[in-house]
Image (cartoon, rainbow, N blue to C red; front, side, top):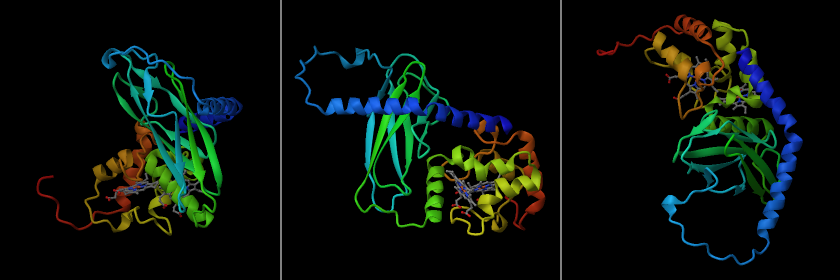
Length: 291
Ligand code: HEC
Ligand code: HEC
């Protein structure tokens, strides 16, 4: 777990180190945008190139390098995505995406992300709109040995824009949106302070309380988070082990195993399973016939 923590720290430090560089990049890309807005000289149509054999100098083709979103009242975050396809004959590795401020988060489908020839996918971007007004212009740097790229997002908040929430509720809904974009978010960035750091060095009951109880035993538990005490299910060793290890794709329940980007090693997961098995006795239900 400490290994994970230090890599988070390193990333934070790297972000800060990159900050002035990022500002320069953003400035340059702004200048480029301004350049694009100027009328272009008439271009001569190039000779017809058969699409199939066209060899692009750039291995990656992006659907756009700048995306825009106009916020609607009630928005806590702007969600944008960039679609990309590898048009080259070789694998392209994207090692990391970094953003120009903590208020913008970019997520790769996997970390790092390897695109085989013809493969494609999306980079998701979430921009925090809490307490913001006017216009935001944020840069995203795609780091890759063979296909680095600068992407930009512009968010316009019309006059009078508000999300009409108190700050606590806005924070909570924002966090939920972050988890919707990536359920492993709780183990990253600013979320680690509450969702991960308290779990360091803990096992069993103490680990459950801070790592799981924060969501499952919250006083005002969110509707999508089940109350584990009132489930009528077969809750055996495998049940607990599976849920803790893998969580569930497409929900807010994260995977806790280090093998899937979580913070726990096998020994810590085993300690949780032992605790949970004794803490949540089996409900009295008839066992399934073919199990
Ligand atoms: C200041 C501590 C704190 C931080 C920072 C924090 N959380 Fe939480 N989180 C909580 C608490 C406490 C709960 C339990 C519900 C409640 O009381 O609001 C919770 C619950 C959740 C839930 C369950 C749904 C819900 O609303 O109850 C999700 C998902 C979640 N957090 C994701 C995140 C993500 C993602 C981040 C970082 C972007 C984050 N949290 C940052 C304290 C925090
Ligand atoms: C960020 C909030 C969050 C944290 C932290 C969290 N869970 Fe969950 N958990 C959820 C949500 C949301 C679901 C519902 C998933 C679904 O929709 O099926 C869930 C589902 C589950 C289920 C399945 C219940 C069922 O329907 O059978 C189990 C078991 C579970 N969690 C155990 C744990 C344990 C153990 C931990 C700690 C290692 C943990 N959870 C940490 C949010 C959380």
